[in-house]
Image (cartoon, rainbow, N blue to C red; front, top):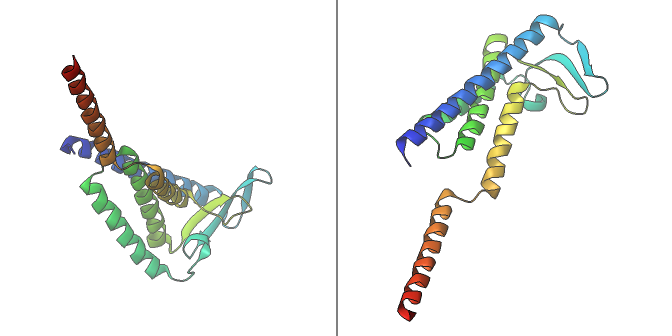
Length: 179
């Protein structure tokens, strides 16, 4: 893989991480500034509400009161994503999905460090309340799983092209031998 291509994909990774982090932190700051804790504002009545809550645990309220453990896990996960980002990616979409996950992990980590809890506010009434960082983490992970399950490894495209070239060359040689 060409070094410049890997560097370009690193830019996509860091751009996705920064954009995710900015949207997450700005949206949480707006919620904290304009909606009282525990209050709920309908966006689409009976479907989508902005409900300001502070989540002391992990996703869906798991592991309440495990703030220090969750901080350590988030630091480790963020370090792994940063290491991956520095290595570069052979596909832009993988760089973007991984960047989304880094931005989400750092967004929730910053909340835990600053406030001791994560600000959640997207309330669908049929699902636990969540935030943009949670969405980025989930969507990034699902995209990586989806692409891993349905995508053909990049090396197999090369093998397919080489195989077709070999067959074409063989046919051309047979035609020349006949003619």
